Length: 160
Image 1 (spheres, rainbow, N blue to C red):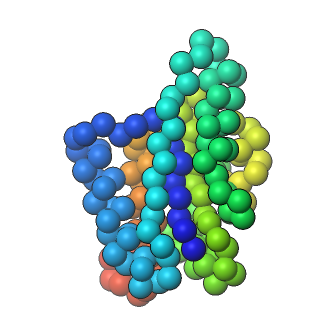
Image 2 (tube, one colour; image 1 turned 135 degrees about the vertical axis):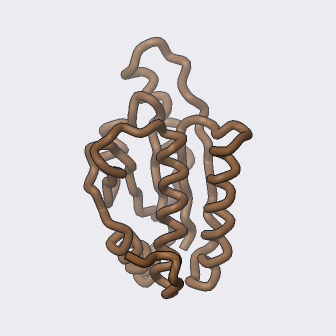
């Protein structure tokens, strides 16, 4: 199963990029042992449209174009469900065992993810009730993917 993160915006060089790259590499190392292909990142350019609705629609169109067929979608949304790490890992393990081709994680831009993409998500998750910058959400998602891999393989990284 391929894991794909499609995110609006770019992580610039610096500590955020370094941390994201570190968790992506860690996941790739452990993911191969679990039958996952490399974790792919697709950065979508932020829309320059003046009004919010058009920006969200433009970004949704670009994100939709990057989603492969036969994909399970996971929408990251501040109004999504709070899912603990073990449950998150169980979702990934189940999809892998069900031979899902692609699990695609969608991170919207500053205006959020389009309602249409949110509805298409098999899972809609939040990282708590707070609103987070989309760059931080990307890092937190990558850490959770790595943590899920460690849970599935029985590595002691996850101790809770």
